[in-house]
Length: 200
Image (tube, rainbow, N blue to C red; front, side, top):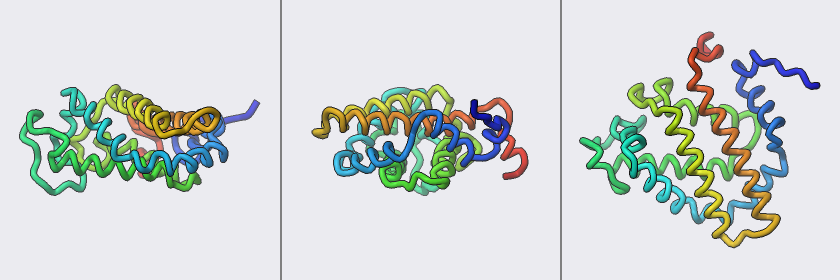
């Protein structure tokens, strides 16, 4: 039985990622599968982003989080939910972020730096980063990750991939999104993370 330092899981991002990676079984073959998906998914990233924001703007519980100023956005703010649309400047700004995120997943080096990146993505949806007014409830983050997983599968299946290759790539993304989901949920713990409490 392998011994795991559970306290270190809460303090050391690389250690946490390595443990999850090993436990879930996300390895070099999965990274290779993600690389193989680039010619199929990269041209579809814009469609994936549009479909994601169509759903996000269809519910007040998710759309309301686009009313406060997003970190880095300098343009005019929407006055209310009725002002939000796919073409609002702040929504276009957020869509560019999601597009970069998806392209990063396709092209990122899956080494110790990926843990920092996934953790930053998780943190930015809470008051711990960016605008302190942005505090997306965990239920909405889980909904988003489930939606992204389904949309990715839909586009993989529609891209011409089939059989064993489709399965390998789909499984690789499924594992990756679960890794991301952990680096989201860790920021919703009842108590401050030990690393942050220590000023890390």
